[in-house]
Image (cartoon, rainbow, N blue to C red; front, side):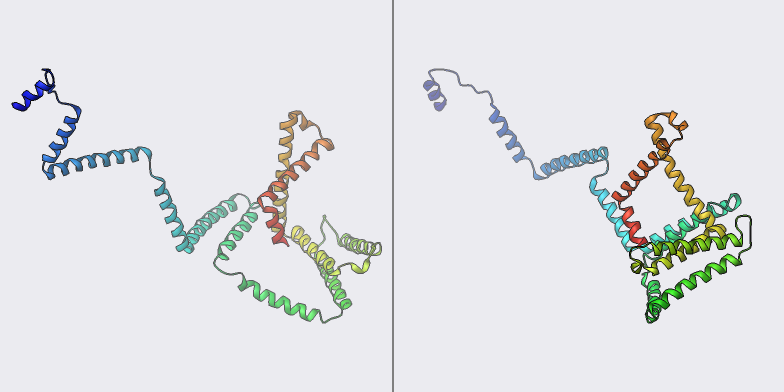
Length: 309
């Protein structure tokens, strides 16, 4: 009472504002929390945490799977591929084989002309899968040994004897095949001998007119004639060879036919009625050059030349 009266006297008789301020509310809240038992406070805090975790789960469901989950799946797939690569490849090969057998059965009932390229494709895929686990040295090593043995013994002979024996072998093979084949409307024996004589005359003329005849690699010439003769026999005298090269020719024609569609796109449909040199040959040149440049950029030309070499 004395303190209140002294304060009132010091304030000049003004009334004191006893309304609570914001600081008093904060202080009262802290005091209230401090007065509460710890169990109640922990329950309220856990409730806040539960509500926040539920909200985060809802947000994650709306956003979809996190990127980390996708990375984990990819890692599991890669680990499975590395660990069980043999079984993965075996399963893929079984699927391809099943598709191949079904296609062969259906093709046999319809037509046989397109079957041979499909067989070559299946053999190529099977070989790539097989040699992914088995080294090619098991096949190339015996061939290299036999080749080295033949070359070693052939190089002991004089150069003239080697070339003469190679020419005699090629001529004997050509004569044996040409004379043993029965005559047909496509060719008679006398016509085959005429073709053989033409090859000999052309080679002799090129040798005589050469500026450096001693630099001619007769080994390459003999092997080239032998390979050409074998390809001719395969294409003309066998059905599968004829079908294979017919399929290759049709594929090339279909590829070059795209140039006509490009010319029609640029110049209109009226270009199809123009059968001159410019409208038929130039579009094929431009298209083939662009196609080769694309394959070179992708590395296909380098791969092909490396394996052919």
